[in-house]
Length: 320
Image (cartoon, rainbow, N blue to C red):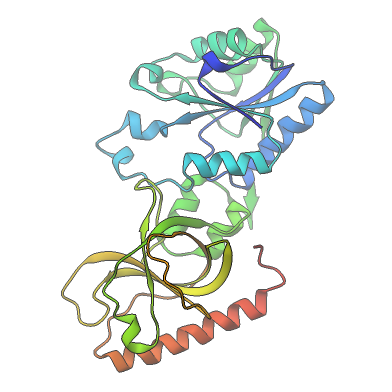
């Protein structure tokens, strides 16, 4: 996959079959669109192209309201990797600015789709809108396609169990710790990257040493408070573990500082400063406060048993 950072870098794309959007998460609906443009590109001896934006448009358009609170399912690096896996041939990343946001839909079509990319065909998702004030839609795109000479196609919305898949619904599921829903919509297990940092080392006292994780990207969404069954990639190895997202300290209730702590099974190495990928599969329970370390320790043994049982039961169906 070729990656172009801006329109000035674009060169030699044959019969471009184009789609556009934020594609946060590259979920199953997004991949349906990518598969379609790949298929259409093969039929016309062309190339598939996705135009996406960085930063996310909402962070630029509403920096003090919804944009400030928006957390992303995938970082730009993760999005690029996911798109490369589904066979996209060309990715155009446009730096989204207040000035760019004021581009009208007709200017977007004329200056970018036609003049810069020489679109052969444009494919959009169901109810997709674009341009200043989201004035552009399928009907408008189809009309201008007739004028400029490119084809237009709209992909129907994607459903799972009669529920429409969207990045917004995936974020909501992650915020509530509903990992099975989020992962089914994504089509792969959600993951979070971070670095191992110093912690309170409370877990060592009760036979459950944990690695404390500082998330790598402040804009990346973190699942809701609770205890999770996870897989962890560190030092080129994959381990099973259980992870707590919550407030410190675990015993008593006199602080409100969120922490990410993971206990790896069958692991005993110094990994301070190491990069770690946390892959989420199931929420085991809500975060709890315990009256003593003994009560906490007993619960952790139950959590470990639940985690082992989960991965043992589903080991043949869970992707690495």
